[in-house]
Length: 332
Image (tube, rainbow, N blue to C red; front, side, top):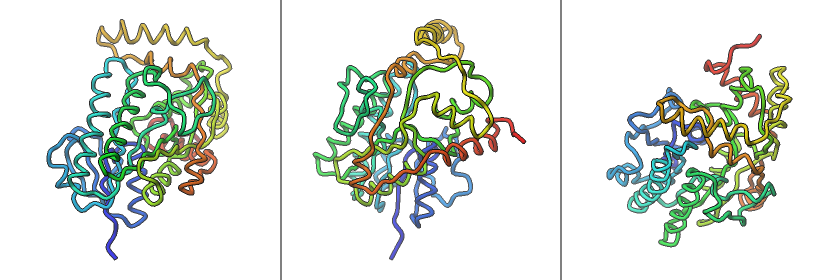
């Protein structure tokens, strides 16, 4: 019996690089779509066929032909308001384009990596797949783009395609090269550059569990359904206590009222950004922190057999990876 063939978009990114490794370990043959400007170090040394291009390339149906699955993981993540048009184009129109290419190539099943960002929040209450914030209440272009990208997936399903949607929460682990906002929290905190925090909460999950959830979605998911791939609901302070326990560092005692980082973010984006400086605090990022982003993944448990473990191993793996790759100073 020949090995399964997977086509992965976003394979050089955080979740994608972990997914590619899991596919290879599972005996899959893997093609990975990479842009000409992509940082490909996450794929160095792997037995992966690299396909250079982007989501809009007309040659993609040819590259996809013969694949047993498309894992569409690629996304443009930015909370900067200046990037709004590019985020909407890449995430919404890009999803439409790659799904059309998969249809033309007769790929039997697509697993689309959405996000709980598309679901939104309900004033800090725990949400599941049945909840949906009205689009006008989703904060920022990224959340809105993931919502509309999900609508593209549903349109594809209505047209006869087999598409399963997965909604990861906030992954933690190795290969977070950019790093993601969560990885940036690790780096800033463990580098002593976080004198204060904002009182918020998130659902954190081991990236290895997110990857397993993708494979379970391919094997067992229902077309047109979405599945939250989550882990533990924790306050930001609770996460930092867990992170600090591995490194002997205590979380900041000071919790800032939200108007302070919001003011800093306004200056960053509207004054310094326009003067050519690289802003450090996005307005939408501060606005998102207003409500805790807590989620219930029991649907994925009951329908897919998804069973995430504690995040402590992921915290340790993330710290070790950031240290080994020069983001953090080596500790004795």
